[in-house]
Image (cartoon, rainbow, N blue to C red; front, side, top):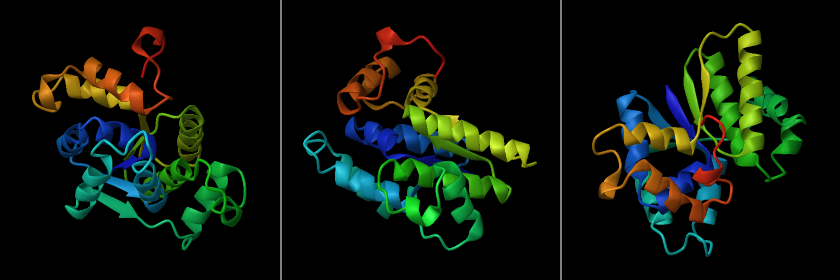
Length: 201
């Protein structure tokens, strides 16, 4: 079983030095952390930007990969299951979609997740962006409608932080999960300030 990471949530945790939360939640559930090659490229590229260049995001990401904490999954369209998943999730032919880099990371996250579920594995995906979460919900419904009993479960930065706040030692630096979330907002315009929360994570 895997937790598949999108670029946004990955950078959130890396930028504020809270990658231990990802490691701990994976270990606690006997899961592996993984990311598509496209997400790897996005994290590496964005970590060089002005927003992230003074954080430890790039170095930490490289360490997570080299230590085997995060597995990078290939994105080549080499199997019919993966190719069909990309097309179904994106709504266009897979070979055309992979030429368009917009939101490609999250599409690859969901395509890998869908294939894992079809192969008989539970999968958890971390996506915060609204369109990506809609895609995830549609693909999870497609999997259920087609008789697949394993789960494609959607997680968010907020949900993972709240879980971490209930565990001793997952959050480093003696912070609360709320304080960590507030730190992350500086690095992710898509995160909603806590004062505006109205729905469940």
